[in-house]
Amino acid sequence: MSRGAKRKRKHRDTPVKPCESPPSTPVQHLLQQHYATVQTLRDHLNCKLPSSSRLRRKKIAEIGSDLARLLDSTLICSLTRPQEPDATLKDGEFREFRSLSQKSDDSGSSMSNGLSSATEVQADIVNFAVWLLFKRHKGTVKWPNNILCDGYRKTNREGGPGGTAIPGIFSLFANPQAAALKTYPWPNLLALLGNWGQEVMTDLLVNCSVFVAVEESHGNYLQLSGALLPAVTPANGLRPPRRTPSDITLMKSSVFYSRPALTASGRVRPGFSPFHVLNKCPHVSHPIRSGRGSSRSETEACNGLNTTRVMMFLFPRQFGLRNVFTPETSNKDQAFSAYAAREAEMASFLGRDRIKLPKRLRGTASRLVQRLQVLHGRCSYTETLDHYCPTHLTPSGCTRRSRRRRTKQTLALPNQMPLVDVATPASCVSAFCQAIVSKMIPNQFWGDGDTMCHNKKTFLRSVDHFIKLRRFESMTLHEISQGG
Figure 1 (cartoon, rainbow, N blue to C red):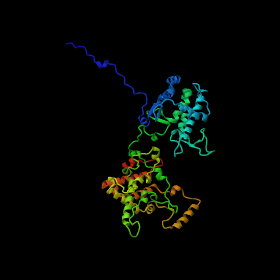
Figure 2: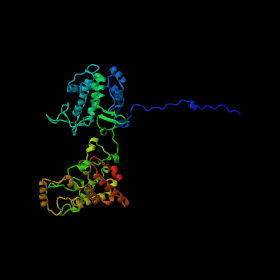
Figure 3: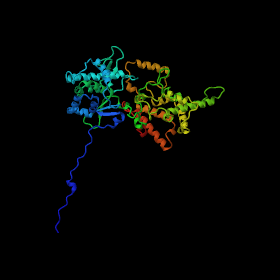
Figure 4: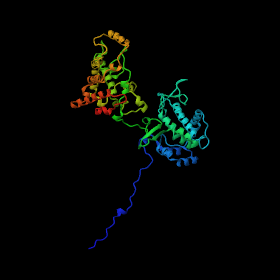
């Protein structure tokens, strides 16, 4: 029996469909969350140029490879929707630019002297943008929240520091973003735009944020102008409802480099400052005043009020106060805000006849906070400091008068010891802080049984790690909860 011919399989003859490549237009979800408009530089220029400028649109479409890469990879972000060119910009801000740079308006379709003139005009536009941002700025900070103004400061008086072509502004340190906008390929792009280029470029640097793609990388951008991204309110007008522990960073600079509290004689006062809540709201065991009257009841009422105020500092979120987990202020204020002073915020609660405690803070939590106040009052910070961080310059048996005399003699010596040799080791400082935490915080705060031992050990280890951090290192709440 003869075999028939093999049946051909259809899938071998079927042409293979090529894989579809992803779109070349960059899509940045992070920028789209913060800005209402995110478009390429090419789309932004086509939107800003007037409809009658057909020649400029044609030149932008037929541009060379280098400028085309800049137009298609650079992202222009704005907090508002794209609009038609505003005529008031040329009559208002652009008139200020012409008076500042002392340049006449180029009525032709190109710059008067070609690329050399475009380079000079581009530098004047960048300087004008910095000057205009400083002029518009009205805030407590001395410079605008714009990366283009980084390194520039206002001159407070006549004859102050200068060194720049911007009137009334001097350069404290170099600004690489401003320098990059003055060099290739930005002057070439300005020359391409013609007489509308000065107005479009001014609006681009003053009212928009420019993100340039980093070469030889995928999806990485470098910001050249505009407000810093963390300070920009999201496009929906709402900030994230809750911050994660990894977003909460301990303010190490205010702990390590702040001025210490001093006593009346000018010596450093160990422990918390007099303005700390534990010192302002102590637990009083003796009557408030001697004599007749309901002194005991007044003492209990005073202690109850002080305990409530301490709980407002420890658990502000339970009382609806400002806290690090649900920030309600702007990012600029949030970065420098200190939660040590809450008198103005707590006035609405303290003004009531009876303060209502949240349900989860009643009972055990209230008693633990009261115990914290008692242990703080019993803790001797000076003796603990002398035990863990003893000084080797003054003997322990000397009186205050002899110590002062010996100190004056030591300062008068020509050959003094190096400051590093006199400094207290970090291990001693860590032991002092761990001893204070162990004495002052009740053990029930950490839990019960093995959980208490584990949590307390983890926290003390984090205290040691925080003290031994180097200058530019930081620590987050997530690291504390995970044990460093």
